Length: 271
Image 1 (cartoon, rainbow, N blue to C red):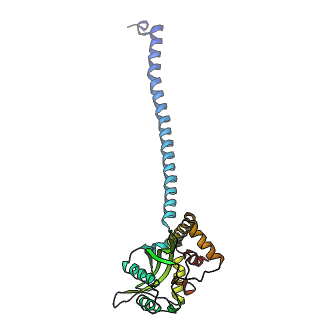
Image 2: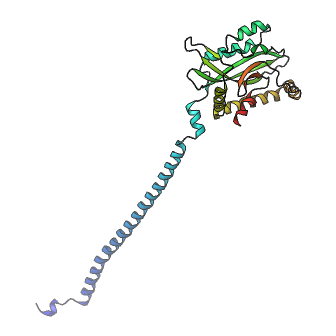
Image 3: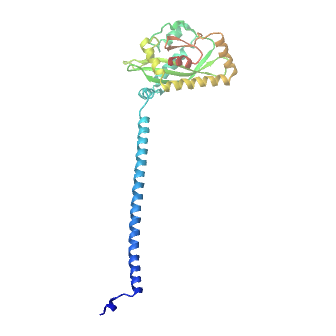
């Protein structure tokens, strides 16, 4: 074969070059696309990981903050206010209150003596003519400082003669259970140590909420009955806060309970 026969024509040479160029170009483009794609995926993964870490750390902080109880929350959790946990306490409080409605002094004192550990000048408390009765008695309790002792917040409705609307009241009492008989009784002369303990638990959030609820109920009752409002307005104006119906153990010692709801007395413990 001659050299002329081995030579490619100009057109054949151009066609061959075009084929080579076509073969090279797709490979180059694919390589660039893969590189760019890999870069984008890496960046996206890094961004996602960063977001997940931020969210996770934030959630952990929120969880631990919420999971750490405050001093007030811890006090309530350790000794919660319980409604009607001890029916026997409610029975004693009911009988105790109704005993004050007995007109005969001797019989009244004898009856009250069945429900208290110490009469503590009980004979000086006389029945007032304006109280018609007690109803809706409900006892909320917190555990006392010693075993078989209780701080009781006795809620009840007090009826006043010639007034249709009853008055919501709440009294704080210290109740002790006899370990031999299982009977419970109200300890009037509880002493300074017990009084300080009762002050302490009365500051608990659940007790304060109960007192606020009763206070609001009292204000609503006055707003709904002009005769009831007039009665208490006159009572306050005359300074008759020593006029009594029952006794209550308070921070100041055993004292007479006025017809005013005792939320105001209990709330002074916050100071």
